[in-house]
Amino acid sequence: MALKIWNIGKANAEIDRLTQENESLKSQLAQAGSASAENASELEKEHSRVVAELAQVKADLVTAKASISSLTGEKTALEGQVSKLTQELAETKASVGAIAARKAAEIAAAAGAPPATAVPATAKAPSTGLKGMARIRAAASKDLEAAGYVPKN
Image (tube, rainbow, N blue to C red; front, side, top):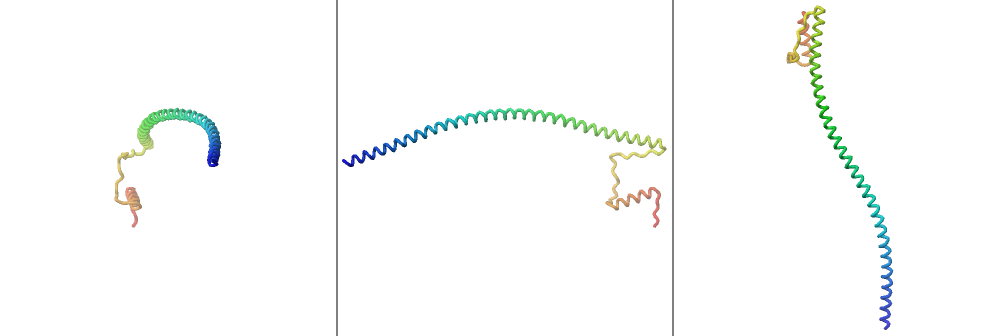
């Protein structure tokens, strides 16, 4: 009979322990539920903020794409203008050169000097096969001979 009482006492102790554990788990569950509700609230706020930020970024992206498209068109138009102006500048340089040559000829004619022969722009300097100082000396000697200078050797 003592064995039955001992088993009953042991069972009652186990029931008490399990009851306490059950209460402890219920309180932990309640705490977890409130923490979960708080976390859900924070997550909803963060989600709303992220969604608003994403919408703003999408709007900024659309604006940036429109700006890029507009600037690309502007760049193309400006490149066309630069090309046109470059061509006009080349034509102006050519006409200024011709005007300057004509004016120089008029001034020289007014001063009584004979007209200078025009060297075409496509003319190349004669090649002597010499380089450096030897080329310079040869050119200087040729100029001196053309001027009538005779060296005393």
